[in-house]
Amino acid sequence: MFFGVGGKVTKIISISSPKGGVGKTTVAANLSVALASFGKKVIVVDCNLSTPHLTYYISEQHHKLTLNDALLGKADIKHALYQENGVMYVPASSELNDIVDVDVTKLKKNISRLVNEEMIDYIILDSAPGLGREALASMEAADEVIFVAQPLEPMLEDVARVKEVLKEFGEKQSRVVLNMVRKAKYEVKQKDFDRLTKTPVVGSIAFDENIIKSVAARKPLLKFKPNSQASLDFMDLAANFLGVKYKKSAAKSFLKMFEAIRSKISAIGI
Image (cartoon, rainbow, N blue to C red; front, side, top):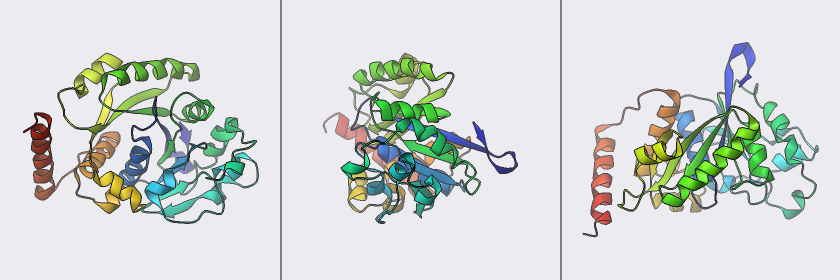
């Protein structure tokens, strides 16, 4: 862990996934916003240089400077910081020319420069999927790695494989967030996923079509549809991270119960 001003700890978390398409960026963006809702100061960094998508989930801004500029030595990463929806973020460039000569081994050093920025509590790294150089650089730069996985059997083996690779970076805490959960019979239950991967599951996010709509609107789900099922789950996830209780209103509790019943009905085909 890195220590900020006055001994305050800034925790760096890599949001990673063994494969693409599991909602890694959705988790990175909305977990960041959820932590900010609890009063934490958060920076989220798009570390997926090959196919950067973070800004679609969090902002409509135009970005003059990006993480690519920092890695190329053209700018200080602090000058590539932007703010929207309650969090600060560092975008990656979508221009193909900006990938040329980028040295991802400089990621850890650049991320460390953000630690004392505004007394930050969390730096969330939205990693590239898989085990390529960008993904490995993100894991190396982090204190903790959160694997995003769907509750399906192939994911058990994928998480186990990445955990073996993670050992190369020393002792790092790792946990799992299950995403796009439908509560269907064919899905691996959270307790079984935890047991079989020997990796604690820190949260479960329901499948929610509002996420697709929020990306189209270029807003985090928590801002686009704060009372949706997945939004409630993201708040629960942030509370689990912080070790606090998330108090839901009666209306929100009813919505969560209603969505759970609807998922069960859908799963049995009624």
